[in-house]
Image (cartoon, rainbow, N blue to C red; front, side, top):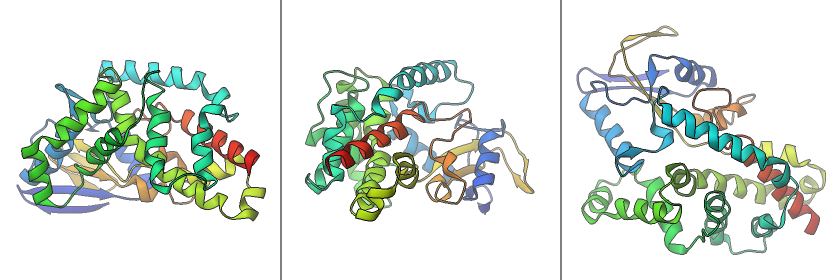
Amino acid sequence: MKRNHIPYILDVFEVSDPKDIEAVNDDPRIDRQFDSPACPLNWLLLKRSLSVLSYAGHRFPTMSPRDSVARKSDQQALWNRLNLAVPGVKLGPEELEPLAEWVRGEGAEESIGLRAQQILGRLFSETFVATPESWDAAITLVRAPRSSNAFKLIWWSLSGKVRRAKRQLAGMVNNDLSAVNAIGIAVHNLVKSLRRMKSLYSEKDLRMTLSPLDAVNRCLAAPVSIYRQATVAGELKGNQFSNSSLFILNIGDAAKMEGAGRLVFMRGSWSSCPAEQWVPAMLEGIWLRANAQG
């Protein structure tokens, strides 16, 4: 763990080792409450993320604390529903054809965002139709918490661009925040995975020899990073932390390390992704379908 610490101003741990990431995430003293006293610069980082990843006074599930009853209930219900669809989607149904077509190189390069958003949106609303406007809203949401362009951030705040993006996406999925997270945030990880799959497919030897499961394991992409914050002072793996310490878990890079693929969905933890089984199954289906027509 690397600590950046300026007393009373900044207290941030950058965590990139897979075992350290799991230790932080598993520690009950470190959570997503995000309401304990914080250093000013810590709070600026958190406030920016919370302002984007909240809607109508409620946080997205990915920013809700571990003891939230609503989060647990909603996460389990979505987990159950998606897992029921795993056997079917793994076989490469017709609905995956637009994505398989793109993997084969038959679709416009820039269309992948819309295609990925469409498949995720239909999980939550049968009437969902991805549009250039909905994809632009998703781009706004994923960039807003991380952009280092101060002028752009100020303009987005003054113009209400982020608020409009969330309102647009929420209106397309009946204000379901799990759905807004899927089509506005998680969709970008799916796009990364599909870009990797397209690269694999372009190599004839690989597409002829890789099993669907092996292809998926090479393609899965994790979020760049996630936040946790200490609720009390303590010590972890030889590192002292305060009740203001912010932990940035760099799971995007860590998940690429040998044996760390479980971090893509934080598998086995309290914050595991409900789509942990559905996404790999869906990608298997795309690989099967792409090869069947290739």
